[in-house]
Length: 176
Image (tube, rainbow, N blue to C red):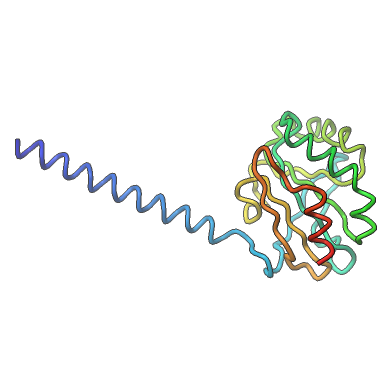
């Protein structure tokens, strides 16, 4: 009986310790995510034509609408590409370039080409498989950021798997 109680007690201590460590890890991840007002961390990623695109390419020139998605096989991601394409001219009139980063595109360049077909080449679609360079952005994987000409994060529009930033929300954030 005492041995069983002791084993149960030790198990609960270990489980509690693991829970605290998991929560601390989640807090550390959340704390590491870029915030409004921060300097936007740079990256250099491949686009659907196999060319490198750097966030620094836009600094001092254009505001960037930085959106995150999964891959060409995700219907919610493709829906967002269609929506962004519809109002691309309005984004450009507001002085912004749209960059969409795909993080789970297992088909590499071929998958990117499928996505580019949906966007009709209106804006760069970039690949950062496994979030190697953009992990400090959108840890849920569906957020959109507005990065001003000075390279600072001006706004973050949270998204979910099924509900991404709407064009109206993006345009309103660009006007601020």
